[in-house]
Length: 319
Figure 1 (tube, rainbow, N blue to C red):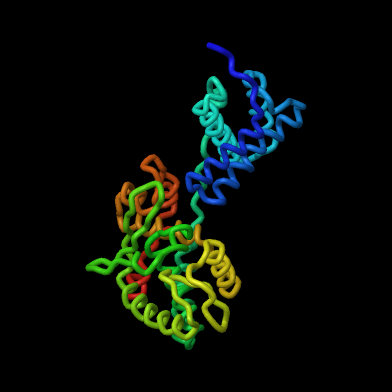
Figure 2: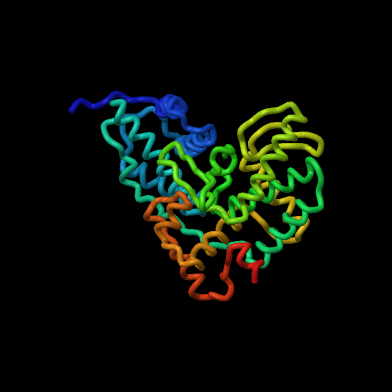
């Protein structure tokens, strides 16, 4: 087989990233690939190696492996950088610019499964009661904003959604019926639905009416469930993942507890386990692959069952 000519990997990475953009990958995804690939180019620079090559020797791969271990403490960080480089070389092989993918010889660091750190149920209840109180005590736009925040709570703790699932939801994604559900769409998988708490429909109906009135007052139109606003008017439809986290951070300061979308969602997972929902159904609701392990959740529930008794808010308040 004829040896391929040397190529400049730095230049080729630019073409690779442009290809990802054309395929519709998000700005953040492309940015992360660029950062991960630049780690490899930084390694070459430190070793005074030219990015022009047609092969990677076994010694170079070993040295890069040591470079990653020295510079990154997190196994997940190392694994991500190796994976980005592997995909880049897969592309080079497809483009007939490299004879084979040498990165397959690097053994990826095992993916670390974080120990769940859910929001304690007493804090979940405290958060809910605070949000409810704000709705009752507020008027006009402030009331609408308070209802929006309560809806965010129900979407995360009630239905287990990630902030990335929530930010672009439209009103058509809320599906009425015997059990009200929220439709979740992903570009790489089929849409699916998660159930919402029974009391959500009344809240959402009132919220939609108030939102329509405020949109008319502010001369703005959008289909999003959520919105961004200042104290005086709605600024635009939709609420970014960062915007949701900022809201939760501000509420955390007021209540002197630590609320994040992640720990609230983990609380929802424990809630589902307490209701004896099958693991496969929970994974479907989480939007993760079947091989994802819920073992850490089961272990904590087994070790300290009294600590992880989470319930639906309505069920707890009825007691």
